[in-house]
Image (cartoon, rainbow, N blue to C red; front, side):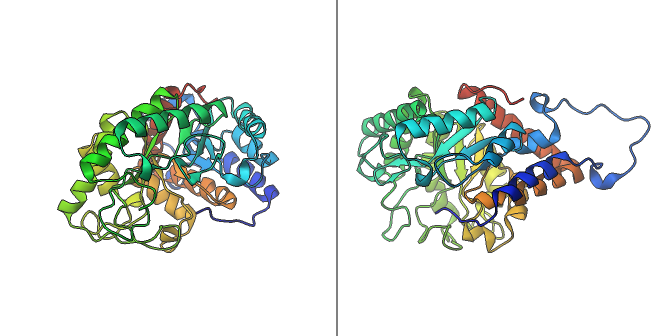
Length: 369
C-alpha cells in the first residue's frame, strides 16, 4: 500500500538543496587533529551527500515527474524511483517518463515497480497476466519472470520488486494469493527459476519478504505484524531465499514484521541479527538489501520515517524504499546528518553504496556522477 503525502513540491525541492549543501564537521564538529590517517576513497568518488542519495528510492504523484524530482536526481540526492499505477498511462507515456528520469539522473537511476503478475501489476500492458499463485512449475515461473523483465525493461523499468518468496502453509496469509503454491522446496524451485528468468530478460529481480512473511495475517502497510514461529519453522521459510541467493538474485527485500525467535525487539528491516547475521552471514547474500515501504504502519508505529531509515541502514539495509512523496524531505537530511555525526554510520553508508553501485553496474546503468 502506498502512503499518501500532502507535502508541496516546493518544500521537497528546498529540502533537497538544504539537506545537500550543509557543511559541518562529522562526529560533533570536533577539531581535526594536525596529523590524521587518510580516509578510504569514497565509493565511486562520490561526496558524502551523494553517497547518502544513492541509498534512496523516491516516489511522486502523476504521469509526469514534477520538477523537484528532476532536481533531486540531478543533484545526486536520490538513486532511484518507484512507480505506481498512478504514474502509468500508456506505453509511450511510460517510456517518456522513465527516459526523463534517466536523463535527469545521468542514466544511473534505478526505476522500480511491483510487477508480481496477475492482479499485482503496476504496468497492465506488460507481462505477466498470470499471477504467481497460478505458476505451478519452475518453467512457468521462469517464463513469466523473463517476459515481465523484458517488457518492463523496454518501458524503462529496470527493477521488479518480485518474486514473492514467502511460503504459505496456512490459511489467512496476507500474501496467500500472491505466492507460489507448495511447500518450501516447491516454492524454492519456482523462485530460483524466476530469478534466472528475470536476469535473462535484463531485469533485476527482488526476492521478498525476508526472512519469510507467509505466516503474516495482514500487510505491514496496515499495522504491526508479529511472526511468532519457532526458529526451526523460520528455517524452513528461508529455503526459497537461499535458492534465490544461489540463483544470483540481485536484490532482497526485508520484511517489516517482528520475528521474536530471531530478534525479540526489532523488526526485520531494522535488525542486524536478521540482515547482517542471517542474510549476509548465513545465506552469504552479496547483493543489495532494500526495505519494504518505509512508511508502513508497522514502521511508523515505532518511529518517524527518518529515524526508521537510519535504523534500517545501520542494521544492514542498502536501499530505503519511500512510497510517500513527502518522505524524502524527512529521510535524506536525517541520514546525511547521521553520516556526518557518526564514523561507524558513515562506514555503513559507504558499504551500502558499494552494493548499490554493483547493482547499477549489473543492470547496465551508468555510474552516478
